[in-house]
Length: 421
Image 1 (cartoon, rainbow, N blue to C red):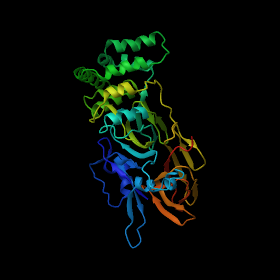
Image 2 (tube, rainbow, N blue to C red; image 1 turned 90 degrees about the vertical axis):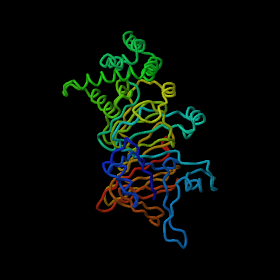
Image 3 (cartoon, rainbow, N blue to C red; image 1 turned 30 degrees about the vertical axis):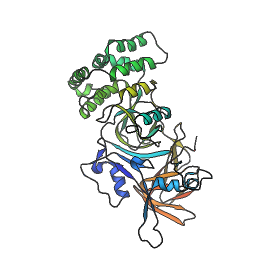
Image 4 (cartoon, rainbow, N blue to C red; image 1 turned 90 degrees about the horizontal axis):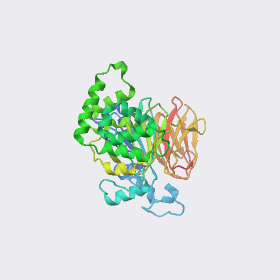
């Protein structure tokens, strides 16, 4: 079994409204949910900022189970636990390639992007206190409810041009040149690379004088608030919501230029390196490369690194592809990103039946989302009871039988390196 870290960030859902809090409470006997405390993320993995502990049997002559940092356990025998062939001695050179999380989102997260490997190494070298590891952080989000909303990537130039006319306050902020570049491109039927136009627009927006931003935020919010409720668009409502959560923050303008996504349970999307995004609300699974590097530029009280963000973005102008996963068999739904760091399997086992997790050349972490049952290994010689919130680690190249109780179906999630590519 694993004991995982619940992170308390300001944007998390409060108290027992948070799935993260309820999962952690079910997992740890000594955990108590604070009624007024936000619970934002449950981390399952070996990242030092939220290290999971593995619970091991007592040593001979002792009564109490042992707790050990998961990273120490997997590095004690990389061949056995991580599938690194031939490396049987302890080594710090190897680790999980992924970090698995559950997020409970009450308020919008910061407008952010994650660096690619090359930039991550540079940022870590130059500012190790801000960028704490040299790894990239592509990630995938899977909705756990029907209320997941996010912003991701730039809208099409046509959409942005239309929105600039619809929201003249942003046009005031970015200035006449950036506005003219967008409008002129549409009028002349532009179909080239949008990067130079979008980069100039984003730079003008992100570096605008604060007084200019504040003045136009007030104008825009007053104008939208004066509209009849029935005439407010989804975009209007989102802008007013962000203005209420982060008064005076330039990020309130962001939905005018970024894609606005509404996802249902089971929907997923992938966020590559150097792509701008911000989760707005909902509860999700999130899997990523094992990193905590974030470059922020709005809707946050944390450090904003505008220069880096303006330089690093891809400035692609496309709507993210929404996936419903790939059905492997009647029990297993697979979510595969285009990178080899991670993949997600969602497994449902009907009451009274079982499902065999095949051996793969990757370690896995497992989290129980619904129901109860057992995980069995070595012909039932090793058995672990599982129920809501229980988490487990599986070494590479091992199998397990997932057995649902007679009176309860069982839903688990497995995160692993992307052996499916």
